[in-house]
Length: 379
Ligand SMILES: C=CC1=C(C)c2cc3[nH]c(cc4nc(cc5[nH]c(cc1n2)c(C)c5CCC(=O)O)C(CCC(=O)O)=C4C)c(C)c3C=C
Ligand SMILES: [Fe+2]
Ligand SMILES: [Fe+2]
Image (cartoon, rainbow, N blue to C red; front, side, top):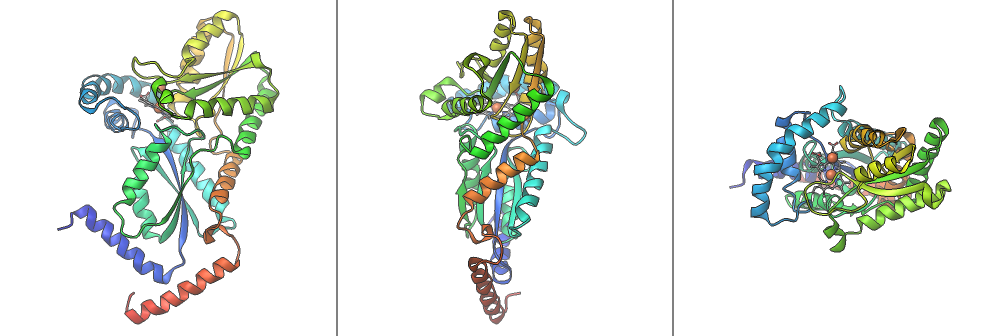
């Protein structure tokens, strides 16, 4: 006997099979970001942290040992502390990560649909809501036969990008009729992305003045992940170097650091918090910080850098720390992602645009299928 979940999936699949006879196929871009708690409270942080930190892609410590550390220490002690930090950045519409990701997804869909009416954009989160399973279920109902997955991480890491891949492929295992699937691995080398980040820094410097130093702060990962072959560190270094070169910065005018470490193991170095202190002590007065590993602003940028980081730098003798916002839902970011999706959607009829040969052929096929479906008595 199928369980209620399986029955729902079957109903959705049946809907899709029937729709396929009546409607033209669609493609979808599934934009996936990390996820955020439902509210800035310890109660909401507990399930979020438990789900996030139980992911084998994020934590590689043996399961039984980790279960005790997670449930005995991390979840009880970190939840109230993180809740306080979230409360500082929470907006009237919710968590900045979710609000900005949602707005970006809407704007990306509007941009794509100016000439690609059969391409939808959906947003999902690896942890928390809106979850990947629900997004996949919705795609089914809307007769989406081609799926382009866009993890919102310019640099690949197994801890983030690969966990998106795992969850999407796990979710797809519930389906009988799979869509065609493509997966964007990273876009740290993308010319449009590099130009957009560079331009945002250039504009910021024009408006707010040039600093003594520009710090590129990326989210950290454990050092052992790099040694085991994760390319994240190198992609962060390449991103920063490319942007610094485009800005025409000399060697001493910029540096790369890694933030947000968790636990006692060694993470990628130099650490952002320690560097902020050292720079203050060394006499650096004006600092700009940019975080090109994040597509939209979130707790880690708005609080850890713009509030805590700023305090650390000023306490150590610095005069001003200015945080340069992420690309967020800016028109420039929409253009970057739209071009990226169009590039990765090449060859799919939904991405061809206009009434080209591919599309007319598709429509003819749909009409033939509709006639066949009627003969079979399908509604
Ligand atoms: C072992 C723990 C963690 C690894 C590895 C890690 C990698 C990693 N994370 C991001 C992006 C984000 N992380 C965010 C929050 C966050 N990250 C961790 C832990 C690890 N991250 C925790 C426990 C949290 C929750 C907040 C906290 O308690 O500190 C966020 C922000 C989410 C938000 O709601 O605003 C993002 C984004 C990257 C890019 C990355 C590795 C490349
Ligand atoms: Fe993180
Ligand atoms: Fe953090």
